[in-house]
Length: 152
Image (cartoon, rainbow, N blue to C red; front, side, top):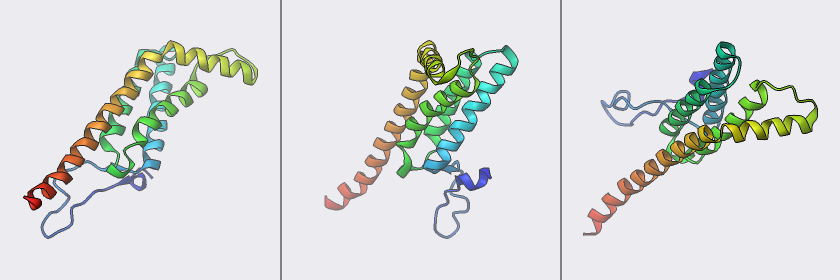
């Protein structure tokens, strides 16, 4: 199933083989699935080992955000900084220890969890956003360089 989510990026042409060792690229949907799966795995492990969501969950979220930003395909770059926070909130809703009852109680518990873990959330999202921006600018520069040489 993971192989379906990952799209191998291969160079076309004679003798190029596997594309020079490039990592597999994620589609937008694959990015969302990997974000949710990775964040839930980190949250589940943290809850299992320590009884709550703490530093292990935050570090796992940072690793997931980094991997999403590095592995997402160029046309799907905006998906990386968007999927991370959604997965973070989903992990809080599903695995945060809470005694709240009802929809209102769950929403208040989610808001409290987001407020207490805002540092991890903003750091991971900012990391993904910075990497995606750098990749976008580098790709734009690569496409502009041949055009500038041709016009000279």
